[in-house]
Image 1 (spheres, rainbow, N blue to C red):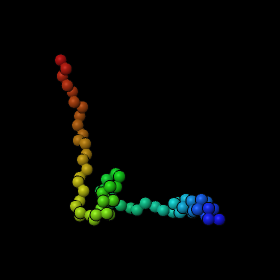
Image 2: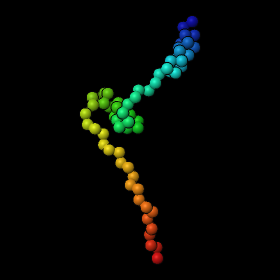
Image 3: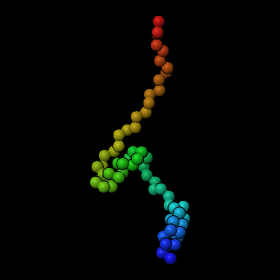
Length: 68
């Protein structure tokens, strides 16, 4: 009976529960792609500093070289 609960009922209950879980809304400026800074902030406390600005590539025209 316990095996039935562990291998059938528990996985089915977790799968059904996963349909109702939504990710938390967060500020897109916070953290990095993998969330390492969020994890470190949770473990060691936040430093209170704002993140660095994101760099944006400069729009330039095509470069022509003289190969004479």
